[in-house]
Image 1 (cartoon, rainbow, N blue to C red):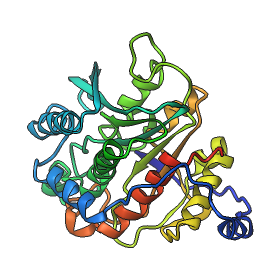
Image 2: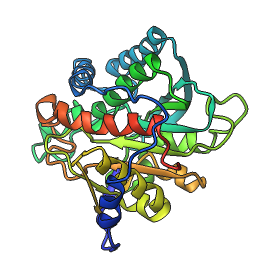
Image 3: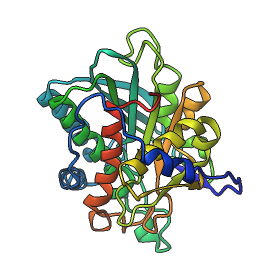
Image 4: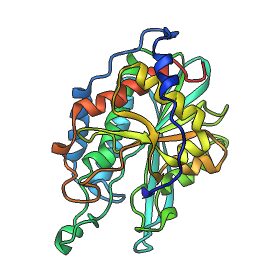
Length: 316
């Protein structure tokens, strides 16, 4: 992803959120418990595969692991592959967005997404030898995928009332620093084609897309992402109200950075999409992005929120 700071100011809804906490929630059924420890296991499993940049052995291993995970749970799995180009070299890349469908009867569906690829180089390192290494990507890549994989387990055991699509984006992190549109190759491709004939996402537009990225860091602090606030502010604020009602302190209802991430191509197509991200991550794009900097407690807060929204839509 690519980020810049925003100076936009917007009054927070803290008073409204605190009032909402006192109102009893209307549940659509029991929300399954999300385990941060289980998500952490799934994060470490990915890191054990090595770097997962497109075309690497680790990338191929992870694709197979996600497919096997869905198959073992009895959930529909779809691989949506296309040919792209490496922004740095121009070399051909075979990229594959992956979709797991947890089918429900009610409409509209909910989409939850994360990128599963890792950056080909640790370009924020000052040492050239370190900068040339591919990223392990514990937080930047594996954290969001771990949350989605554990959610798949919970939704398979306790089917949600409406369809939930878990989307694993490819080619998010191969871009060139300072050139935003060279990132998020998989989501750019999917956003333009999600409703094509034969697409597993075709049909009614979703309630919205929630993209999670870099959600495993210890001391997680997620503010309002700037593009999400600008284009889907009411829904984003409802999401943070839900987080506060669940006593999840990682979610801070104040304006934060503008981040070009996998939600932006869907916003461009007129869909409601938001990004949950803690971009103030010192180990971002360095060799220090390893499991030791991540926390089960952080993963659990994000997973609890998404599980709750899967069963209790924000629009109700």
